[in-house]
Amino acid sequence: MSTNLLALLPELILALTGVLVMLAEPLITPGRTRKPLGWLAIFGITASGLAALYQLHVVDTLRPATGILSSIPVSGSPTAFSGTIQVSAFSVFFHLLIASIVLVTLLASLDYFEDPITHAGEYFALVCFGATGMMFMTSSVELLMVFIGLEISSISTYILAGFRKGRATASEAAIKYFLLGSFATAFFLYGIALCFGATGSTSIAAIAAGLAITKTPLLGWLAVAMVLIGLGFKVSAAPFHVWTPDVYQGAPSPVVALMSTAPKAAAFAVLLRFLFSATPMYRDHWVLMIAILAVATMTIGNLGALLQSDVKRLLAYSSIAHAGYLLVAFTSAQHEAVSAACFYTAAYAATNVGAFIVLTQLSGFDEKLRTLDDFTGLALKRPVLSAIFAFFLLSLIGIPFTGGFFGKFYVFSAAVHGGYTWLAIVGLANSGVACFYYLRLLAALYARPSTDTLADTP
Image 1 (cartoon, rainbow, N blue to C red):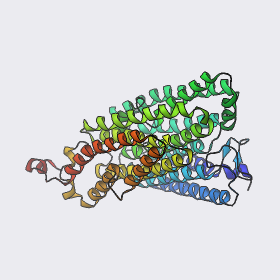
Image 2: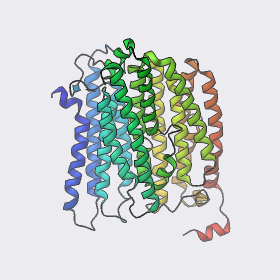
Image 3: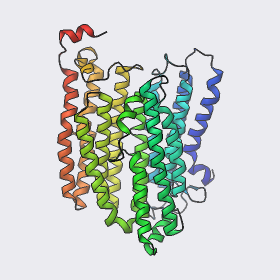
Image 4: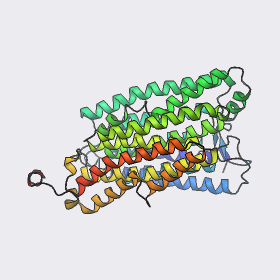
């Protein structure tokens, strides 16, 4: 197998799966189930994950001559497009994480779109195409290739956000996501242009070499700021978070499970590679900006969640706060920051996807359960799903011996080791604030409903 084909194998499988789903959808008689298309998409994402594992096997057989984030290919490692796509343990980790998120989302979506609509095939194809773009982002060591992957991912998620046609909240979600996402993409593209102006290249390795000797350091600093703004939107970092509550409220629950985790994982992978590999000489500048963003994101997310009665909006603000926790890891040295960020990303993805999948099963396509009052006494009627939902909420809080606890422990420990003890303290204080709104939802689940509430329950 050629190195070009091997380097692009997971993405090629997903792109081909999406095309096959689109070609097969018109062949199914209107009114018949679209589940076979869902199973085709599931087969494709499984094959893509297995291809990523094969890539990892190839990388492990090579001597690791460079660091995990290095943009210099390890001798013999698979590359494509003249070295702009590079396979490494770092990229394979995020490939497997994205594939796992998409697989769980597709499994939960098989029945979700069954009755109300007949174009579920488009949904399965868009999920595959979106995942293709996310994987491109994580394996790209050239900013223009990152931009292409970002656009592939973004266009798919813009459409998925408004997939429940005819609903005002869905249309509002799609329009807001598209308009604000377009502005953020413009900032990111402008940052790439400034990188080229300062160094004469858009390659991660060339940018790192060019910024070390550039005669226009201010141009390089502006480039870093523009890229941070563009990626800050994708990870819902404050003050670029304003789209998140409305989009999460209007989008279908399985779509929210996907967009709250997989695109963020891809964006954080790009941010890790860009900051630590392309701009290490500016670390004293961008680490302070990251710390300020982390504090603002944690605080705004948690305080905003305290005011919510709609469960999806509450979880939206929760996801903003968790983006802030993850940013805390960037204040440490490269090796510890990458390890802590990767672990936290995986733990948060498992927890948040699980929470929204349970929400999908409880609410259905019409999402009858929306407010905290709607969840009152739900454990009496759906004890198993309520218990699973409660476990995910406890993990989001960071209760000991859950994935969320270990994720926060590693992130805050990394901040302390990096000399940002005050930031870890702020993070712990925010975790305490978060207990209030998570426990409100837990209390509603296990509270005994009043007689009026029971009478109103269908």
